[in-house]
Length: 257
Image 1 (cartoon, one colour):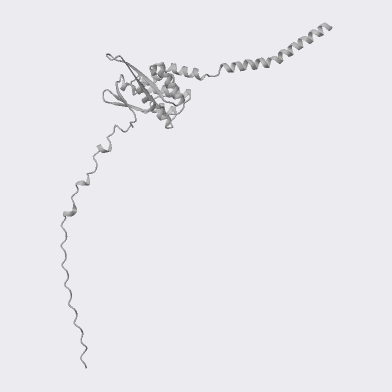
Image 2 (cartoon, rainbow, N blue to C red):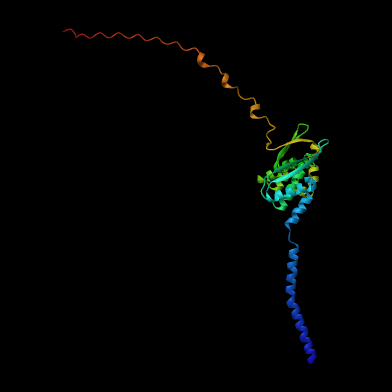
């Protein structure tokens, strides 16, 4: 009996010790799981840069876009053009985002909308200047003399519009853009009007009213410089001086009665 009682005591002690250790083990497991699910900013930056490498034409350009939008700092993009006789030409474009610092989620939305807007304009392999126009706003002057105004997703955002509003103003649904920017831009109703465009130059700082005639082009009121001088108008004749009345004679005293 004593041996059986001792065995039961040992078993109970072992069970209690196991229960006491369980919370500590659970806490350790929970802490470990939390640390592995934390987001690494460097990983997020790398992921976004990889996602938009094709759109930006290079890893360096994509990284510059993500970093500049994230920090609200100047963005420098590089274009490399292979010439037929002069070899390779490299040009750089530097601009500052119209918005301040953006979270990584907003960076993704901004770049997705920019890509959709350029695809809508018929541009699938944009230059650095065209990227700037899509983000900050600008006018694409096409080779045929026509132009395409890009309002700039960052300029609209800086003006207080929400991402959904910006997408709707461009004819998109934000959900479609986030799933596939290029697909959303290519199926847009206005995309077919700008298929395979050739951009001659990009102009910045133009408002949407610049295509309208300026005030000097409108026929204004006639200039009053040539108005006839009123100095030649005939004057009225001068009235002659009125004759002076003769002095009244001095009254003589009345004759006596």
